Every structure is written in structure tokens, then in C-alpha cells.
Length: 226
View: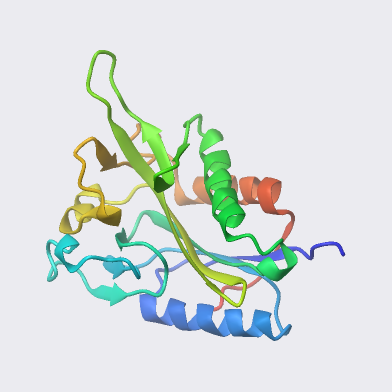
């Protein structure tokens, strides 16, 4: 059976975190019942921290800095805020092979494909989920910065939560947490603008859409859930 195009929605204004989670939950339930199709929802959040299911409380360095939300996604603490493109991915893996490992691998390939359009070499690491950029200087110590985080949850083989690509966020905001629980000083956080690329959110969205189609198949535009 041919896979139907996934919906593709973009929110123009920042979306409250709890409202977004509620909308995701509703869409996932509808997908499971066969009442709605898959959806990729691109948005920005106001500045906040989320704690995944593996979060260690000691990794929250500045609890009063921004609101903190418990999240049902996998992973540890992460930051969301203006200048970061969050893509919530509600996909039906019952029709896509029921392979969670392959799905995460495909999400990484999607981000890498989008970065390639800006001549940025995104890389995977077998021991660290997400997409990384090697910033080691000639003759210097090893240095890798994360440019995109991945945190998903599956409910009866339908995914939600998703990816967060750093386009032009305030990177100092990551200082209130230990991002993804990684304390090694050789690993940091970067963004497209931090790499010297004046990429707009619209540019990033276009690249993400093109790369998504290459990895997951066609999409069709629809209105954002909220």
C-alpha cells in the first residue's frame, strides 16, 4: 500500500509548551484511531526547559531561570526557545516498519540532509543521540558541538515529540542545564548562526521540508493544530 503524504504545518507565533503537548496527544490518538493522518508540526516555544524520562535532577543548574516542564519524551534535560526550530513528528510506524531504531536513524538523516543544504556537515554518534558538528581546530583538542537534539516517544507505534534544530537561539540559555546530561567539556552546543551562517527560520524550514521528503516521502500542507 502506498504511503499517504504526511501533513506539514508551521506555526507563525510561539506556542505554549503545554498547549503543544495537548495538541500532540490529541493528534496521536486520532492517528491511532484512523481518524487523522501523520503530521510534522514546526514551531518555536517561549524560553523553557524540559526534562525527559531519563532526566537527573542534578542536571538542572538554574531551576528559576525558565519554566521547567516534565516531558514524556525520551532523554534528559533540554532547552527550547526563540530561534530554535522545534519539529514535532507524529508518524505512524505501524505503516513504516515498526522499527524504532531505524526511525531515530531516519530522523538524524533528515536533519543531516537539511544541514547539508547550508554546507554544514552534520554527523551521528553511536553513543550520543542527536546531530553533531566537529569543530576541532587544527592542532587543537577534540571539540564537537550539538546542533540538533532528538527526543521522541512511541505510543502504540505512533510517534510524538521530535527534533530541535538550533537556528539562531541564545546559546547562553543552555547554561541553566546540563544539555542531554553530557558533562564532557569537549562537547558543547552550537547553531547555524554560531557557525557563521545568517540563516533565517524560513530558510531552515525550507531545508527541513526538502530533506524530510527525501527521507520519509511526500508531504501536504495543513493548518497548525493550535
